[in-house]
Amino acid sequence: MPLRDHFHPPLTPRYRWSELHGMWPSKIVDQLNTHLPPEYRAAPTVYASGFEVDIGALEERERPEWGDSPGGGGTALYTSAKPTLTLDGDPLDADEFEVKVYRDDILVAAVELVSPSNEDRPEKRDIFTAKCAALLNRGVCVSIVDIVTSSRANLFDGLLHKLGWPDRSAEDGIYVATLRDRRVGSRRRLDTWYYPIAVGESLPTLPLWIDENLAVPLELDASYEAACKAIRLR
Image (cartoon, rainbow, N blue to C red; front, side, top):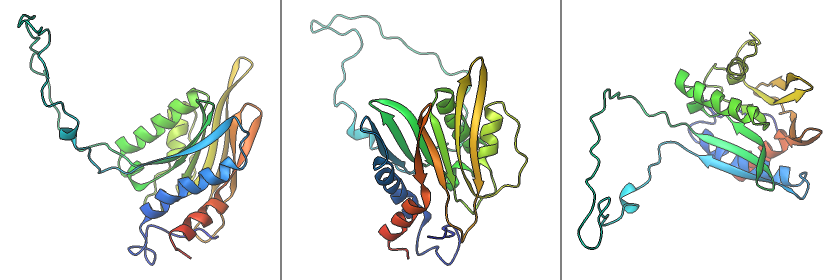
């Protein structure tokens, strides 16, 4: 199915981009689990910022003071000094739409679907690239799917910079990419598969590396079509 623009009319406001992003990870999971060996499994993670936990429901009704004993004795409570500096700012919560692949209980690969909140501020972009860099440094293969047409930020370039590699200095735009950071002898090697995409085109298939010499296909076009059909977007 050709890629649609989920961030501008005519799809918006009738179809929200979050509907696709909420459904797409589950369809990617369905697709991956047909290819993964028995000891592997894929699972979705979807977190939309802006939701709050009712902290009051988690608080204990009565909490004993530190050091209190049934007999009434106890040690003096620690009284913290006032903070030397307090800073107020906007929350840095960002959406997370991702698929994780595990071998037994070990994370081996992650698919990250970029949302507008990952790109709307430098701090958010830094959080996203830092997260991906940390995964790569742990030997986790990372695939990035960025179909956000409402922003010109390129998180792939930011990730390369975070990892200590030169930027590509290419024109910003939507794209899909896979990266893996590995050791070859005494040298470090970053393998990348980067494909610019465009609205109206089909999405490519990416390699998703689950072991040093084993990759499974990340069939983005098929999972995208399944997600669009699930939300009745024809």
